[in-house]
Image (cartoon, one colour):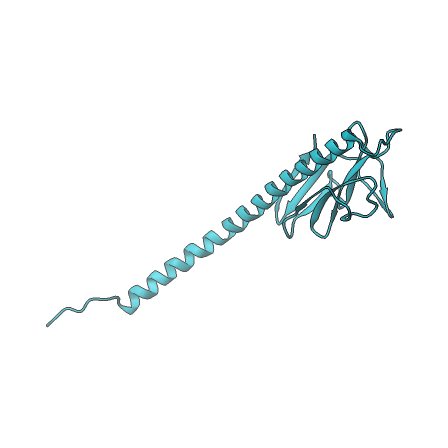
Length: 156
């Protein structure tokens, strides 16, 4: 008789079981990697926004005095904005914007308060500011979280 080549049903089932087991182990690691990458990217975006807002405050194009805010950074609709103090609503008349990864949250320091804005004066320092009815943060320590991944970012 002639030998037939090919896979038996048992070999095929064993191979599929092995592939499924590998996938079950790999998926949680992949999700953790994606969350970690999103946290790192959002931290970088925060630092860039802070640097741009600080530069705008130092430039002080509107000649703001008395230590009040000359520029600010804010979050609206999953975007981070840098705006001159003349822009009274977050997301309008902005100088720079960046997209925050979906399902990523930014909170102030060790609290659970969601970060919404930060005003910077003509010395590039955080100062109290109220946008509409929202009091902006002066805390330069922000926590970026996605899933179980989280990290604090100290703005400098």
